[in-house]
Amino acid sequence: MQLADKVALITGAGSGIAKATAILFAQQGAKVAALGRTKEELEATVAEINEASGEAIPVIADISKVEDMQQATQEIINKWGRLDIVFANAGINGVWAPIDELEVEEWDKTLEVNLRGTFLTVKYAVPYLKKQGGSIIITSSINGTRTFSKSGATAYGCSKAAQVAFAKMTALELAKHKIRVNVICPGAIDTNISKSTEERNLDKAQEPVIFPEGKVPLTDGEPGSAEQVAQLVLFLASDASNLITGTEVWIDGGESLLKG
Image 1 (tube, rainbow, N blue to C red):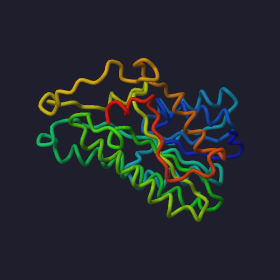
Image 2 (image 1 turned 180 degrees about the vertical axis):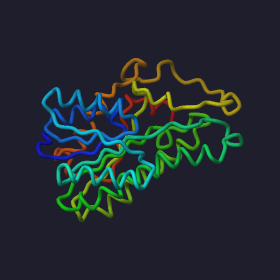
Image 3 (image 1 turned 135 degrees about the vertical axis):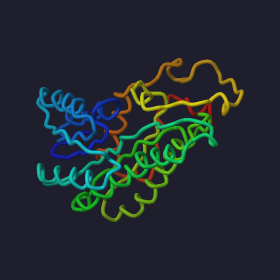
């Protein structure tokens, strides 16, 4: 699944799934634009790639801001002259609270980053992907797609469900340009995204449900790793998946089958 001479934009590349994917892509020969908001984290990702004889650049941007994403895409084109792969991974968990206590501004923030951010990432990349075709991979979640038991995570779940719809709509629209669009839906993965979660009064929203012992059947309850998810993203980015588009893939060790 070589990616030699391909240029990839990876958002949220300072940590977690996106960082693991950036490193794996570079190992497979891709040139990587590691995008995020935290300069120190991005520079660490890029340094790790470059020290291993890969090629990467840090791109500082907020995915929810139009000017940032316009400039980010142009920076990539100025550097390498093309764009082949987009991994729209960046997102937040946001505020989890009972629906009547969730502030409008909190709802808006989650949708702004997760859904608007995905839209802007894809929108400004598409003109360059159209030139030779390519692959877009979007990170959704089991929440809002297969499971609906995360009490208070309404805004988050809705943003994740909407990403799947967005992928299916754009997959059909862009197929004639040889651009594939797919979605990954991770379950429990060992990353730091939980740091972006603010939980408030969830006891008021909880349902008294007892799930089977162990959250992930395939791993005896252990979460998956960012590196395992990166392997799936690599497959969807490569020619090995060249007939797959408009498809969501759950990567959760069977967790969502317990909680659906």
